[in-house]
Each structure stands twice: as structure tokens, then as C-alpha cells.
Image (tube, rainbow, N blue to C red; front, side):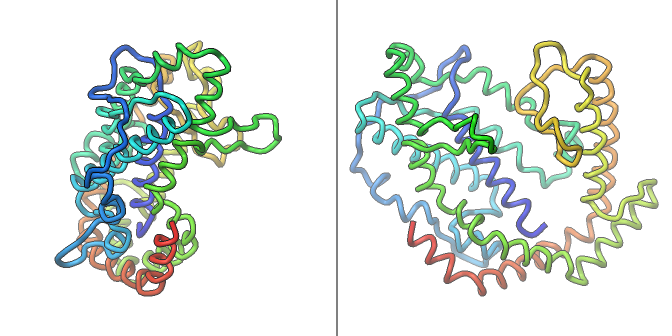
Length: 352
């Protein structure tokens, strides 16, 4: 609860932006795309200041203050990541231009709906999507991918095959080795990777200090106040007919049943790709993009979604006492984390 929700939101936002950069196809063009012109305006020369952000008044997230990310303000978060994406595109375009290629800055536009779907901390979200498992909050957002077209597509298609290969290598780096025997890395390199690695450098903080994040999260979850409130949640859920020890076990139960439906070899309509991974039963099923289930299986998912929303809504109502104390306790533990690791994190950010 301590770092997981924040980190997940960051990962989804970053992944959405990175995937969008590699998209092509569709029927309508991205709006307001322009050729790059290297700028000397204050918007690009004050990069370091704006990327680190600023804060004033009482802290609602010591970690957010340290990283310069407005974790507790969803509107500010949307603007923060939109600004980073815009600036990353300018850097990509300048890099591609330096390597002899044309590149139009991409305006992601409606693709930012995907980030908005992550904001699940409301009763309205729970009523509509439950835990966001069988009732997929991203389903409508994927329509944006269908209508999105890379404004560079016509230029790329006008290149020779060799030139296109060189363009792709310049943009995203060398393609992964699919025959290496190990799971390939799909992290972008090239101009795209360089831009995102620079502007989204805070993401590496989560990687570098991952063990410390986990330790402080475990301490948060073991706090007697949290344990007592969680116990109250379990008793409340029992009173309304559900037997779970905590929210995670309720989500895991829905996820297990959802995965069982999608793993059936007859679940998907002919021609649709199966979900990933298809191997270990211990792995959650991951479905990227809209897929078509055969009617029988879609009905089973729909029924599960109804049950999921009921469980999640009961969980939300039973979580009132926990929500009333969790934020204050989380700030305490975030502050402990910052006190212990702040200097090291500042040094890591300064080295980027």
C-alpha cells in the first residue's frame, strides 16, 4: 500500500507514453504535430528546474516532494507527465534530426486517457470497474490506439527498406535478439530511449532503491494501527457475506477466476492472439489491447465483473476506517524513508 500504488501508476504512465511513441496505423492523424525546430526559449532551457518541480505548504507526500512529482494531485500529475512527454518528443526530434532523419513531434492527445484510468482511488471508479480486473478500466482507452497514427508514418514509408531499418535503429535502438534463449528486453534505446531515460530519470530511483521501498512498505503494513484497521475490514466484509483476510486476498480471488477463464484454449475468437503469459499458472494473465472472447466466455467474464464490482464496493465501504488513518501513517513512513535515503536519492538524481 505504501509504494505499490504510486509505483504502479508511474509505470503505467511511462509505459503508455513509450508504447505510444512506437505506434503507427489507424485512421486519423495526431493533432498539432510539427517539425522540430531546436529552441532556445525558456521552456527548453529551464528543463532541470521544471523536471524536478517545486512544492510549498505542508507535505502530503515526502517522497513526491523529494522527487518533484505531485503524487497527491491527480490534475497536476496529468499535466506533469504530459509536459514530460512533450519535452521528450522534442528531444527525440532533435536527436533524429542530428542523425539525418526527419521527425515530427507527436502530440499524444487522447492517448493520455490511459494514464487517467489509473486514478482508481474513488468510489465512482469502484462502482464502474471494481478492482479493475474483469471490468477493465482501460478498454475504452484502447480505442485511442485504434484512432492514433504516427505523423511520421508517411515519411517512414517513403524510405527504402535499408533507410527504414536505419531510421528504426536511430529511433529505438537495435532490435532485441529473439533467438538468444533469454527473455528479450523491449526497453527502447536510440533517440527515444535517451530522451525518456533523461526526463524520466526518477523511474530509476524506484529501481535503485527498490529494496528500501519494499522494506518500508512491509513496515507500514505491519504497523499495529494498520493491522487493527485491516482486521476491522475483514470483520465488516464477513458481515456482508464475504470471507477475505484483506483487500489483496479479495483481488487475488477475482484475478484467479478471471485468469482461469482466459486461459481456456477456446476462450478467444479465432484470429485473436492469446493472452500472455500462457505458461505458469502462478502468473497473472496479461491481455494488451482489445480482444474478442467467444460469447460463452464473454458471458462468464461479464458475470464475474458483476460479482467483482459487488465485492470491491463492499471493500470500499468497509475500508472507511482504514482510509481515515492510512494517509497520515503513510506520510510518517514516507518521511522515515526520506530521512534515511534522501541524501542518496538526491545524489542519484544529481548524477543523471
